[in-house]
Length: 317
Image 1: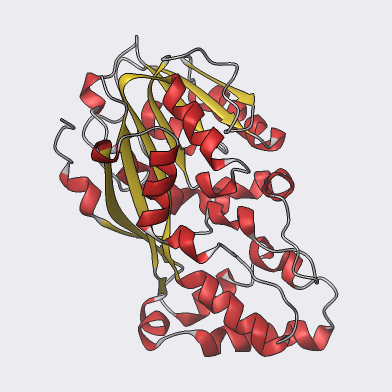
Image 2 (image 1 turned 90 degrees about the horizontal axis):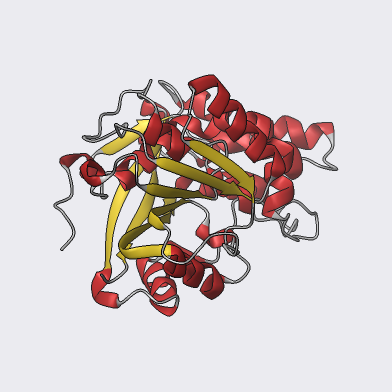
């Protein structure tokens, strides 16, 4: 049986958020989707600055489902689709944010391996390794659906936060997770349920260019359901009775009011591709159209709802 979930897992997080889900931001006027690898390669330097706080809180909620107190220097954890090492930082370094999860950081530190398909992300990971002194961590440029460099049954846990929907071959990716987990090991995977930021962006875009065909933060609707996440894990080999699903709400707190949301959604992290080919008049309309999309409580609080699914799948012992 999986140990009881700590109280932390049910917390609602309200912090600045530019999500890893921008991997799927559309880039072409024709509506063609940019490859996640190209997007992350271009934006790696800004990623942790913009996405770090809330991504950290979502990752912390996910990690709180693991038996952290059972891990030690002989344990091996895979940080899959690692980005700059947000999960690894929680595992190995004291948090500088207002979060507290019993068992984090893990002492003595386990071995942690990070993989990401964007070389610039791995460069950021290794820079963090040097800055924080992660002597038990390493990282490689590697697609998360290809774990062939790793032996069977080698990991005590695999964490993939906001990355599973970028896999080209979902079944192969999950099957590789299953193969490389030790018997009794855990796979923790997160994805989105509610992305209010996407609604705001889409509304502003459609008001200015209604026939653009672009879909910022696009995700196939089925990926917003827990059933999709469960089905993928099952097809990859995890028994249905070993999969548990919960929710976390790492809401995006832009600031005290509506102008902070407008400013945040005008960041090049969101608009660089959207505005390609736009006239000055169209760009000049953006802030006003974003403002029109905001709900009354968003204008008052500066908080935009973002809710995630957390799946915890255990390989039979």
